[in-house]
Image (cartoon, rainbow, N blue to C red):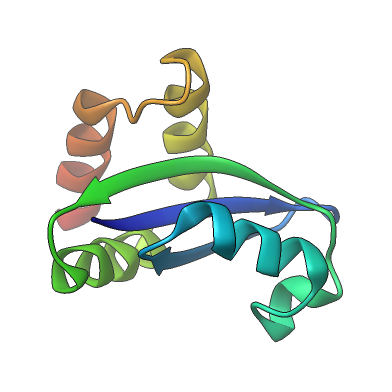
Length: 101
């Protein structure tokens, strides 16, 4: 399995990435080893996670999320929280449709 994830950094900024091991990747972000961006913005909090069969799908979704506005990313995170840690796929589709216009 492959995953696209969104982190909220200690300074309030958002970071998007993909991984095949979310637990290990989050630990790497928390220790400052995963990314230069998050290393100076710890601690980080996982606020969104989506599961994909292939690396290519996860990377494509990462690119799409990176094109979203901050407000749209926060809406994804809010839907994730409302659904008990599950992506709100209807909200994700609505945001993707708006972004494609």
